[in-house]
Length: 194
Image (cartoon, rainbow, N blue to C red; front, side):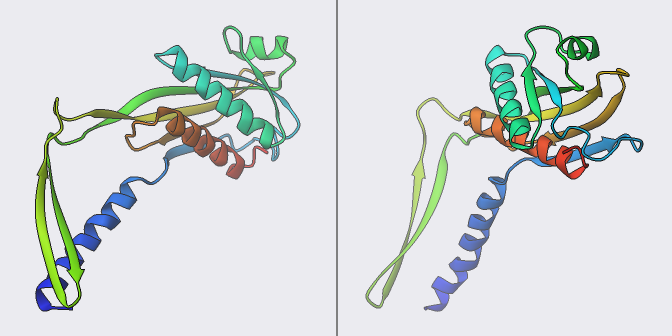
C-alpha cells in the first residue's frame, strides 16, 4: 500500500466505526426497584398493560410490543381499554399495572449536502475521488424516542419498579419502539421481575 493511501485508511475506518456506534440500540438511562419487592414478582401473573404517547399509533405499537414481551417472559398481558391504574388492574384480575410513557427525546437532522470520499485500486494503481451531493428540499429530521416504564402493584397502588431507556434518532419508528420495549422489559427481567 502506498504511503498516501495509508494516511487515508485510518480516518475512513474511524468514520465507519462512528457510524456503526451511532446505530446502536437503546440505552438504559436509569432504573429504580423497591427493595422490598420479591423475586419473580410477575412470573405467571396477569399484568395490565398500557402505554401513554402523544399519538395513538405510537401508543398501540408500544402496547403490542409490551404485551408480546411480557408473554415471552411468562406473564399474562391484559391490554387496557381505558384508564390503566391499580383499580383497573384489580378489576381485570391483574396483579400489577405495567405503564410505559413514550415521548420524543432527541432529534437528528441529516445534512443538506454531503461530501464523500472514495478509494479504489486497479492493478498497482490506487486512485481516490471526492463527491458532493445535495438532496432536493434540504435535510430530513428524525426523532429518537424514550420510554419510561413503571410497574405498580395492584393491591397496594404502590410504585414498585421504574426504568427509562432512550433510543438514537431513526426514521424507523416501529423498530425504535420494539427496541425500547425490549430494553425496558430486559431491565425489569434483570431486576428480578420474571
